[in-house]
Amino acid sequence: MLTIDIHTHIMPETMPNWAAKFGYGGFISLQHHKPCCARMMVDDKFFREVESNCWDAEVRMKECDHHGVHVQVLSTIPVLFSYWAKPNDALELSRFLNDHIADVARRNPKRFVSLGTVPLQDPQLAIRELERCMGELGLAGVQIGSHVNDWNLSDPALFPFFEAAERLGAAIFVHPWEMMGQDKMAKYWLPWLVGMPAETSLAICSMIFGGVLERLPKLRVAFAHGGGSFPATIGRIEHGFDVRPDLVAVDNKVNPREYLGKFWLDSLVHDPLMLEYIVKLVGENKVCLGTDYPFPLGELEPGQLIRSMPYSDATKETLLSGAALQWLNMEATMFR
Ligand code: CO
Image (spheres, rainbow, N blue to C red):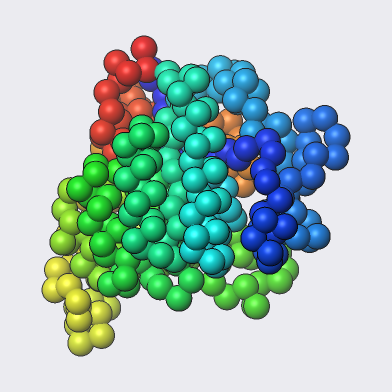
């Protein structure tokens, strides 16, 4: 059964010293302090320990073989988006990451599909880099953050970018990042446990209420982590739309429930009841295996939850690859 994991992150083994290059800090660097392991640092502050499966395609393929995953959709680690940086610097960083991620897929086209990253703080630069990603680099699309500095995804400044993505046929993967409310979330890993699901719901609500999905019906968007808190709160969101259209329906008159089944979610919910629910909510054609490989909050045995469900083989195949192929606009034969 062809198995495609749409939510995996990768980074280059080495990167230029961006802070020295650009003359200011805040960028990620890697300290390779022993074989197989590195520390991701923001300036001199420790961010996360990573292992070689974070950059080494051979290690990744070996682990995929072990878990029965045939194809990984690669995207950068969201902390590298760098939307806060000066636009031309973020463009240079994006181009570096995109050249790398394209090269990984080019070397193993049956094992990897790549998504780029773009400097969305400058939508015109982002469109230019998106064109390069979809043309010269042959990527399948891009991963973007759940917001861009002060802009939600409904912001008119971002609309030309989404228009370009629709025109170019780029798949969009929306990933939470720079989580809201962190001043109240210093303990218990709350930015990841509470902030991330809220960020994803923020992104979905913004794209619905801002009319992005309405105006661009051919745009193919997938949201991480099973859509975060959106699926569980769609009843509340719809009710709010019904009772306070003066607040909610100001830019789009269409009931938010109408958009269920028009975007994709990944399957990373760690809970069979929730997986069953989102499959019913948006349809099996709109739920794709996603694991957040190689990070510990991901599905540590990729595909295990879907395989454990009492679904027919046809439904399992849809969840493990069919829905992903539609989102990516690709054919299964490309991977055989
Ligand atoms: Co992720």
